Length: 390
Image (cartoon, rainbow, N blue to C red; front, side, top):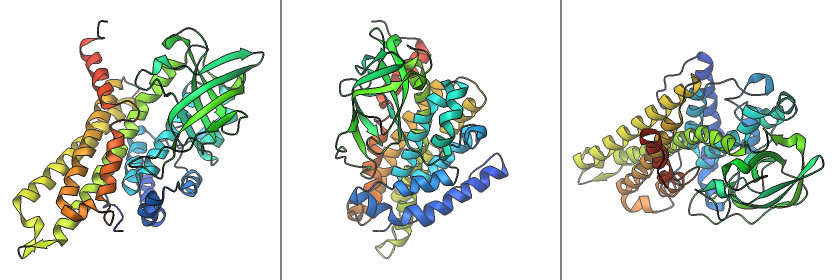
């Protein structure tokens, strides 16, 4: 295997603290993540100890309030941390993004008492989260979910199946959207469900073409009893909470995509300067140089797009359209760049001896998760010309 530490990106960071944070992440990536990435991905091993280290280092709660164990960092900084982690290993970067997504509902919509009770452990106490919205029969059409929660005294009883759950079976808590009322988006409520709740089980992880180290599984709720004190927001508010979380989560996916694309570009550029054909490095050939130039330009454009959306979010301004654009552009960029990286490496790019083929397999899923890129186009168009007539 030829995995090497990512080349440092020249970042424009707002504070000295943010610069120190990036240096910390790069040190952890170089020492703890990159050396094992290829081997562990090939074996399908989930690096739970890395997430424990990230939690202990204050990296699992970066965009949340310090008083509850968070890092008080703006999204502009948090997303660049994600990019660094994803460049080292997507399983780790995506895992941090999903954990942040799973923590969002309670952090943004929980009561003061709920935040005080649960957030410190979620953000800095070693816990790992999962986000449960999709189901076997409701993916893009999330508002048609069937998992149901029925009130029983001071508890809710949850029954149903969630699908495509990152960290399914290994998470310590699940943020779960369940139907408590009428059909459609107005009948959905959010709950914080402990990972060891009686009646909660996970199926065997899906066998995926990429991201093999990140467990993705169906999660079954067989009469899982959850106290009303673990309901997040009012009954029926769950769908707006879910969509609000996804707006931020899409920025996380965009940053991860740029991390994968940057790693692929670094690998292609290294190879092009080392590989000699016709008596000179292949980097001397104009056709290949133009490919590298296009790859680098697409990556820089994607990075600028996700950071612009992050700054809108940090300023408290609407950013849903820009988040959809960032997710769309950055994940499509990751796909194009990784395809080109394999091409530049030629036959070696198609082998598992080099990481380019892994980056290509991983890039594909980023066009699908947290809203397919077709859904992103619908979101963008809705902001431009209004909702479609039915």
